[in-house]
Length: 183
Image 1 (cartoon, one colour):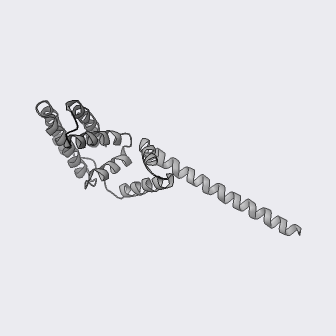
Image 2 (image 1 turned 120 degrees about the vertical axis):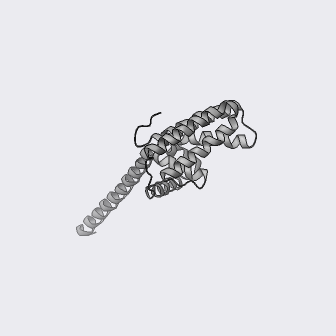
Image 3 (image 1 turned 180 degrees about the vertical axis):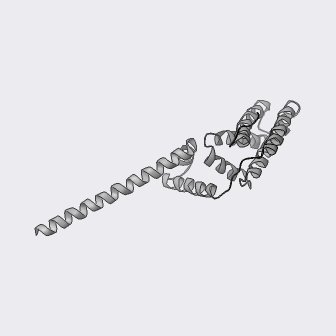
């Protein structure tokens, strides 16, 4: 074989290896960006998916949808109004835990709508929360799961109390995001 062909083959092999290494590095970088953005939500989605690639595609699509939304901070008046409503919701818990939990779920959806999040259904709300506050979405899912169990008659007062604690974490993040809340 001619020396020129050997050089061409070696150069081609080096180029192919370099491209493969670059592609692997890009994949690793994109994966790390998703892990950084979604935190524990990344692991949950990957665990629930059939393939990691499908999970990552879902997370990228979720991030793209969120990035298209204009989420805004609440005005001071709206923040104060919602803080007052939350105080009332918590006060209702003593007399009617189920109603208070339902009110908490509704209030969070209302705050999200006011801030510009899509609120069509729980899954959409949870996905959007996961893009901005990935550590918080677990609280939202846990609270909603108790609320759903209650609708079936499978949640007791202690479960509802735990749901309220989770809802409070979500509420405080949504109301206080972007500036100091008076809570």
